[in-house]
Length: 317
Image 1: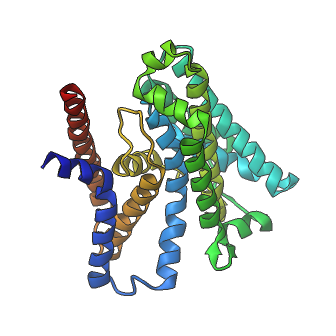
Image 2: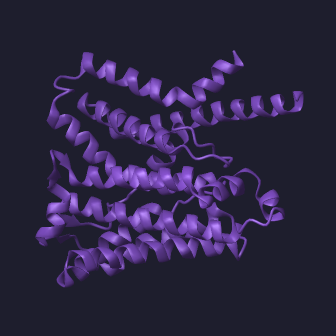
């Protein structure tokens, strides 16, 4: 029975995803049409990109609540620099996101501030900064290169989905194939032991938060390109909740020491399909938020049971 629970924690997101697809095939008209699949994937992209960075942070037993505000800052900066071209403007947004992540990481690493407090400060202040930068106004995007990023496709695959897929591969390689990935997992598993082993704990934490800010800014650029307008008051709003849900449901424990990249992708897709299903059947958006809370609580409960099982096995040995 305990083994079944452990397997459910590791693979439950895939089972839930399959069941949700089967239910939609029965109750949702035109669910498997190419247009609907394209729409769901495109709408999932910002959450997925943010969730990739969130997975890295949670893997170190941290949390990053500032990602939505970083998206808003990127959205506010983007139209200001489009006169220099799309690439320079995007580069500036990414640098700003990296700087925000570095600020959070410095507070956690050098000042000893708890991650939830450090990133909460930027969550509040960052959104206000974005509104100041944009002068509280929505600005239309007229740069054709950026509009092509939001609506273009490669071999029938939307460009934003293609970019997200590339990022998934890069993060998976970073976690699974590099020394940094092994150090990240070690720091999340036992920070004190990692310090005693001589691992560069501070550098790992700084880079992790920097990457989270960088990916959040990238998500802000992609979301703005898709919406064809910069709206810092709404871009990235509550995305931290969706990202954390995707990561936790995907099997990355809040206690750190593990990062499941493919599980995070499945978690993001699951949350997108749940929201889309409820919307298609005229269920209020508030119900979606409550359901996300239930899903997070259930996933954390399964993780605690799985962690307890591993500890008991180690004691038995």
